[in-house]
Structures are given as structure tokens and as C-alpha cells.
Image (cartoon, rainbow, N blue to C red; front, side, top):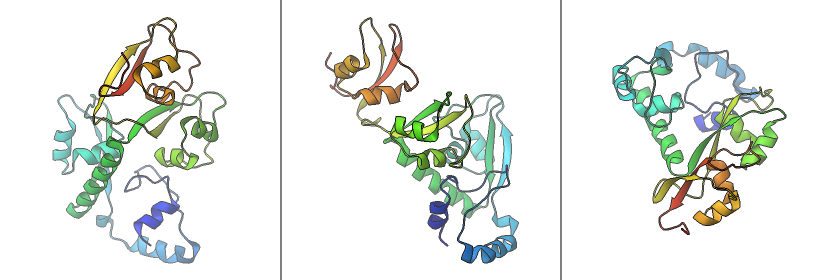
Length: 235
């Protein structure tokens, strides 16, 4: 089997190696299951990626940690779901301990992931509220349930917990290239429709950028994030 075929059968495995917390269940065709298990058991453990758990210390940075462990900041960001470069003291990190060839592969995959999401995707954190289902959440964000399970490394029949945070990647109509990031203070009489019209953006995008899916109203003084194309607002 190719890696792509395994990933297609197992969309929840969205990294390049399983985490150290197991056991894990992998879906493979029944006609090759026995051979697969046999070859896997015979694989030298030195060829597998091992994991180290690291707790961020004072003075650490991603680049310093990456250099110390012979990996890259891109790999650390992707494995630990870090946006930007900020890390805080005491934060736990998973670090892959791999040979040079494996590190090259990890780096190439991490860069691909970054390139795919840097300009076209916006990360949203959805907090599960009472009555939420994967179907409802997928409809709200206009994504599929399969995508949600993949992004969160979960099974489709998993029971959602109140207060649980789910990661959603949403394609936006604007990206960081050629767009300005503004903070708008809601005024008395404002509505999402009026604000969207003012900045010539979509109401749905305002909802996505500001994670307003669980809010019924906006209130005066509330701060809203707006991505505006150059010379795109109406003043």
C-alpha cells in the first residue's frame, strides 16, 4: 500500500506518526492484514519515530528547541498545533526523535501543511455546547463531519463533551496577502449585516473570523476582527 492509500482509509491520522499515547487502531484491507502485521512486527524499531516529551523552560524558543533536537520549527509547530512562534514556560511539547531521512520527510510534510493553510485557511476553535453534534457543527461552519474528525484526530462516533474544544479549518474569501487586519468596535445600532456592508465583506466571514456561531447578538463596545482588502471599505 502507498502512504496516500493508508491516509485515505484513516483520515483521523493527520500527522506522520502515531502519538505515544495508544493503543491506536488502523483500518487496512482484510486481504493484506496478516501480511501487514507480520511486516510491521519485523520492522526495526530504529526505523520508527520515537517521541520525547519536553516542557518549555525560561529562555526557550521553538528555534532553540528544534536545533537542540535536530528537527525544525515547522515540524514542531505542526505536531503540536502551534500557530505563530509563541510558546510559554511550562508548555508541554512532543518532539520527534528520528534519523536524518525521517527528519527530511517530516520537514517536507510540515512545509506542505503550512503552505496549504497559510493563505487559504483560518483556524477556528469551537467550544462544544449543550446539544451540539458533529452534523450540526459541520453545517454551521460549512465543512464536512469527515473533515472535523480528521482535524481533531477523532472517530466519527465519538461522544462530544461539553466544553470540549474542536479545531476547525475554514477557507476564507480573503487571505493575509494584500489584506489588512482591522479591529472594529461595535456601535449602538450596528448589526453584522451593516458592518459587513461597511467593509464590503461577507456576514458569514465576520462570523467565522470572530467565532460568533454560539452568539445570538453583538453588543456595543464589542471588538470584531475584520480582514479587509486594500481600499475595500466604504468608510
